[in-house]
Every structure is written in structure tokens, then in C-alpha cells.
Image (tube, rainbow, N blue to C red):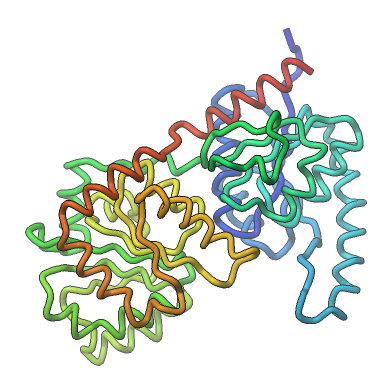
Length: 371
């Protein structure tokens, strides 16, 4: 029987796709051991420095930054930041003395998990994407266990270390008739019309916004309605179009949709980027989706995420370069095809991994109790 509370370091971040799984894992750890001591280590200036404290956890920031492939001279300062971050990570690990270090990808997880492994502390990686990130590939050799969201990850990691757990998703998301009825009122929608939900992430996506602006005439003459999350970065620009009465009445503009439970419940079809966390939510909630992978991500991993679904007829993919021309033609044809919507819904549901955070904590428990 362990007399002292277990201690956990959770490291990584940079994007919501890394941060949300990290917080979900920490919450699941707290459910398992309510006296657990948890600290996060992130990258200074990145999203985790705000999101993690808002979730109730302490975070230490490292000055680590990514390598600049376009301007090689900038990498001199990047190298100094990396050295400083490695020293800081060693101090954090030495003083905190964790039972395990958990890495979710992103700049900060490299120094922290390397420092932990060097001290003989077990490490666990969580890889969200179907194409492994650079940091996790570098850390895999010394990792005790690697939790993945897609099959076929043996091309990146040792088969004996891999456990298929899926990506943790928001626990408050649920499709229900109650949410559906409330959603129609919340978004001022017509319950007799089909609904497209278009998501470009919290900041937005230029291609998706351009695509819908170019399709206003089509949409105005259609029998569908759209919930359009344009993103905070583009909201002022799109709001001007609304003030000029250029946005059709059946298109409802938002900078950010806070009630995603209601938005998912009323949606008949989703248009989205192909981030791993979003795909996990669509799978669990059985939502038909058109994926438009972002071209501005490392290793083009969003296209690989999308193709992992397309090959199972579980999603439709439109390339970013083609979206302005064909996205809403594709969407309007698809939303009118009930058989295809049903096929996509059933097939994406078959790929869902449920209770992922708890399953990851199961693996953590095996490691630390064995230790």
C-alpha cells in the first residue's frame, strides 16, 4: 500500500489538439486518485499557459520553441532556448520527483520526458494523430508505453509498446433529443430544415470562410441552414458582411460556438479541418463530416488523419486547394443524400474509441504500480 500520493508530470501543448487530451488525462488521474499531485510543463507564450491554469492545474513554462525551417539563422536562438529548457526540465523533474511523466506532443514534452527517462522515471506518450509527431518519434525509444488513436502506428513505434486507446474527448458532449430541441432555439434555427455546422477552429480558417462567402448565392436559394463558426481572427471582417446584409438569413454567423453539445445535436452534416481531437468527437457522436485538411501543419498530418477515415468510407475529404470551388457543391449534394449520410454516420461510429482518458490512466496505473 502506497502511503504517499502518486505524483504526475504532464507535458506538451502548443495547440488545443495537444492541450485538451492532456487536461482530460489529468482529470481522469484525479478521478482515479483524488490525492494525486499533478503539475504541467508547457511552452511559454503558448495556449497551454492560459488553458491549464483555467482547468485548475499548476503549470511551469519553458522557453522552448520550434525550429524555423525557412529562416535558419533564427535557429541559433532556438538552440539556446532548448538548452535552457533542458536545464529547467531537469530541475523540475529532480525537485518534483514524479512517479511517471506523461507527454502529449508539442515542444515542451521533449525536454521533460528526456529528463525523466534519464533519471529512470517511466514515461508514457499519447499520440493523437495517424502520423506521429516529431517530438513523440524522438521520445518513443525511451518510452515505457505509447497510447495511440489510430491503428497501423507500428511504422512509427515499437509494436510491443503501443496500446490503442483513442483520443480523450470532452465529456460534456452528448447528442440527445433534449439537446436537439434546445439547439434549434439556441441558434434560432428551423427544425424542419437540415443543418450544416461549419467549424474552422477557435481562431478560424481562411479557406473555409472564403468557401462559404463564395457560396452565399447557392445557400440563399437552398433549403438548408448553416451554423458558421468563422473564428475570432476573422469575425470583424465577416461581421461587416452581415452589417451590409450580404450574409443569407439561413446562415448564422458566430466567432466561436461555446455550446458545442447543442451544435452537434442539431447538425446533419459537419464541415471541419481534420484535427485529431475533432475527428475523435465526430466519431463518438456519429456525425457525418466533410474534412478539409489544413495545409499549414507539420508533416501534412491532417491529410493523413482524413485519409484514415476516407479509406473506411467514414468521411468525405475536400482538399484545401479545391475547397473554394467545390466545398459547398459537395456539401449541398451530400446533405440531400440521406443514404450517404447514414453510411458515413455508421462507418465513423465504427472507428470510435470510447472512454479514452480512463483507458490511458489504466495503462498509467499498470506502470506505476508495477514500479
